[in-house]
Image (cartoon, rainbow, N blue to C red; front, side, top):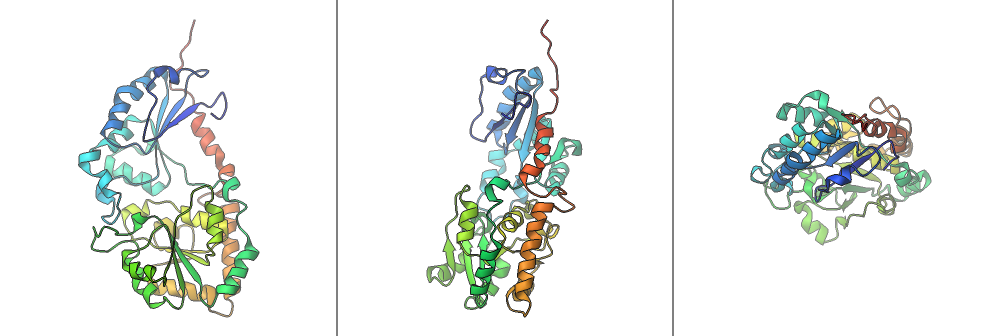
Length: 352
């Protein structure tokens, strides 16, 4: 609850309160229900038979929130979550839920465009609410002196990290070993003594032997609250974020770029829509990535290039760019949520 004039509830994918009085109990009634990542026949039935009629009766806004592409055909075969969205489990539920809701909030413009096109949903229903970083959570995590000292101590063998979930790897061999990292595997293996490679959260099956032999370092993921501190303690010189150029990946947000820019750790991202709108440090293949590493660590002016990149990226977080003129701190963009949650009720009931 933000205040008595801005009333809303967020329901998750596990449960929903089915007592109608709950939606009437606060002053003036609940104004908005925001459904986060709902899919499946049961959720569609719950919306159709309970929430939608109740919302029509009380004048509540129903808002569907989604930050990912849940269309089965567009989910890569290597993604272990793909079976959860098979048609026999999900059916047309995502489309049905979107159609029943009044508004749909998405994390990127491209994600909204895909849903509009595939489901034939009017553009007017979509609102782009980009990912923003809470300053209280990650704003004080950057330490430029520490990062530069790390660079000086490791520049002869830079610590290059890949931080992502197992959804990026073909761990079940459902795609003949082809995944977001396949195009970099030969480069990693051929430079295993030149660079120190670190995988956080998961690693490609093609590097299983190297991980077992400790030639490639594997580190478990961190919980969310300790994430900024944990990332600093992992002593990362450069984050690399590879992605296959497909619709699913292009729908992703630039959250890795934002997080590591806030931390003061440089990032090289795949040259696709996900990253190339926000940074020039992108690559198409291993050769281009190796050139980036060379520029950041092995030329006469590498120290300046490295430090300037850190400061530039942090300035994007602080001052913004053409996509977010107020920067990327959540606190500076709270008006987007305020405007959404303070929307006038659809109907006004008078008691005489």
